Length: 148
Image 1 (cartoon, one colour):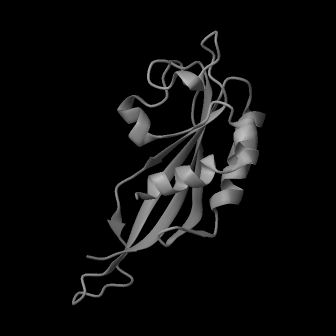
Image 2 (image 1 turned 45 degrees about the vertical axis):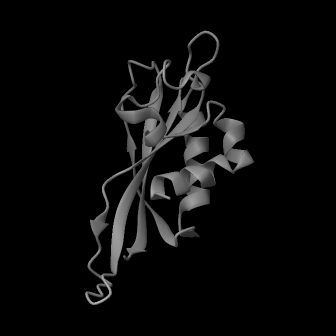
């Protein structure tokens, strides 16, 4: 199971987040490089084509942490950033609600794996003109051990 799918499962399993993120929680594995779209993720939109509040989870490449190397056993710590994009047509208040809940679910938590997750910063992007929606991103640093 990837870190992306682990985090998506945590977010999808939270009724409080889903009460706000009525368009669902999506992963890059599901959407591909096109991301949220009316064609690939139609349930993220209402009947008039307006995007519902939703979250997209995407992982970056894994990188060595170089803190816990064990050459003989081929064990190493790994650092991987996971991006959580929050979309909303309505307002930044809706996005803030989703971001706060994602933070509560992920920051300083140990998830299946075991994966240690810590908040690593936010990015307020411009309006997504293709989706006609506001979008903000929160990054989470995930640390885990890779072995053979």
